[in-house]
Amino acid sequence: MTKEELEREFLRLAETGEVDRILRGLRSRYWRIPRADVVDAYGDAVVEVVRRWKSGQTITNLPGLLTTVARRRLAVISRLAHEEEDIRTLLEIGAREPWEHNEERQTKIERGVLYIKALLPRLDNDNYRRTLVTILDAAKDGVQLENKELGSILGCAPNTAGMWRLRALQRLLPLLKETGIVSMEDLLEMLPVSDNDEDNEDEELEDE
Image 1 (tube, rainbow, N blue to C red):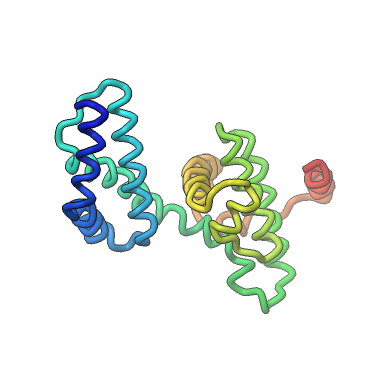
Image 2: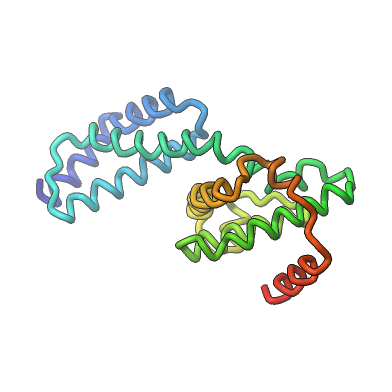
């Protein structure tokens, strides 16, 4: 398939309503996932098809390939959604109960944030590390960042910020599980740190 033929096929899909049909099918299959994420998954599928074409791969059934690639992306998002719930709850806990000041729980949250930050150097991507630091700092202050706000701070598009958040959490969860942390309560109920540890953690925060 030549470049012109691929472009004509993409145009045909749009003009005949095939794109809308694909999106409806994706939304029906992954109805729990927000519509914007489904559209993003289709957009990523388009990018992937073009990448494959540029690398010399044969493109024959464009609608089928777009659907398959988008489904794989949405399947990953769907699978991660449940795993992220505990960690996301931790990151949003301050925003969920801003009217209630609970010193003990706030201390636990701050300790959990420090615990996660200590694991961040093990992440293999600087954008993912920056994303988690930004989310954690906001959560500690009782702020829940939406993708638009997160993107503004990180200097990227909201959709990019959302994907960095997703992928950062995807890489963080195995690190937490290695240390025996499998739920939010596990993290919040860790043994209290010693006075010396608290002093060291204060120094680390100042360095950051």
